[in-house]
Image 1 (cartoon, helix red, strand yellow):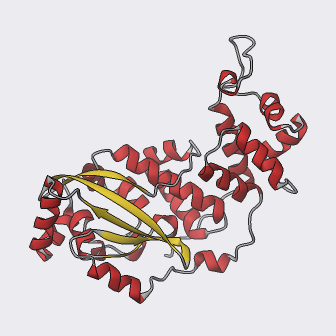
Image 2 (tube, rainbow, N blue to C red):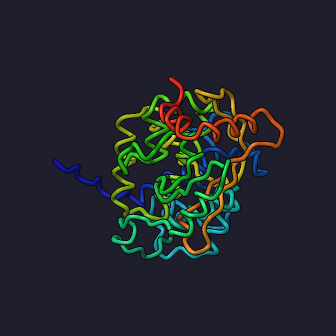
Length: 296
């Protein structure tokens, strides 16, 4: 029996919870306001304090925090974003939630395609683990080195080639990433941003529903409503064949499709991790098979 898609995410509820959690993380002293009294009924700033900082009426801000973003201006959103000390990613997320663009439902449900030339580029990147990621943290294409490091995703069903499902539902990936918690946070932040851009995406709603049922860690992190983008950094892993790896990653959004990213990993020249990648490349298919199991 085919699995029924989950209902769309409630954009009004998403807007309400996002504003409430951003307000709760600020204290009066953080924004230069006096803190009268120790006992506050709610954590963080009160609505009237936030409204004062943003230069809007309390009633107006209250309606917005209740999920009513209709007719809100970009100027007001900018003022609220400044008052809440939002990052660029959080500001963009707020705008998507309050003033959603008209997206065709069929477009968000349509499978993403990777250009043939991009697949050829992946295959030509010798010794560099690389893959193309898409919406919902889907893994769309990858090269041989990515399979050697992260596992042979070709052995998975297409719907299972998804970072969120791998990180939260596969115990071996919890062992693979040394800082599993940070990897999990990054994935959830990415899904939150997708939810703001595509609240009507049935596959995204189904994914969030499945993970919420099956993973307590996902429920905990999803409730934070955190959003952020990471374009580069360092990822530490513990590989079953070569042991510890410290790889620097770079993420590049494709100019002709901003919902696809090319992600590459490389090691510092002359480092133990560089030698480990060289060994994985020399082992070829054997390394890919071993990488598919990842550490147990």
